[in-house]
Image (tube, rainbow, N blue to C red; front, top):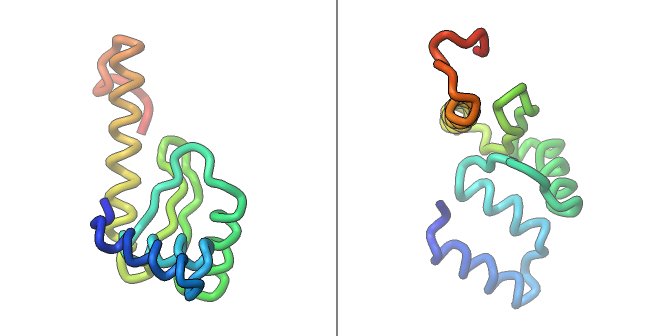
Length: 109
């Protein structure tokens, strides 16, 4: 979760014309250390994040089965990996509850 002060600072910079929405998206990921992409990410936000990856400001992990796509600050890869793993585990547990079977007996990773 991003502190409200950081969000307000980014909004203020955008209102004053010192930062674009694309730059704010990249800065938000840098502040949060990572961003899990669960569902749909708007095209302009994805484009800005991918450009930041090309410049080396951010890194990206592709979606892998139950693990979501993730953009992250290069220093904090371990946090991104942990968050992706936790999300995958919650997803598997949710499916297990709906399907009413024991996840310990499942062939899923």
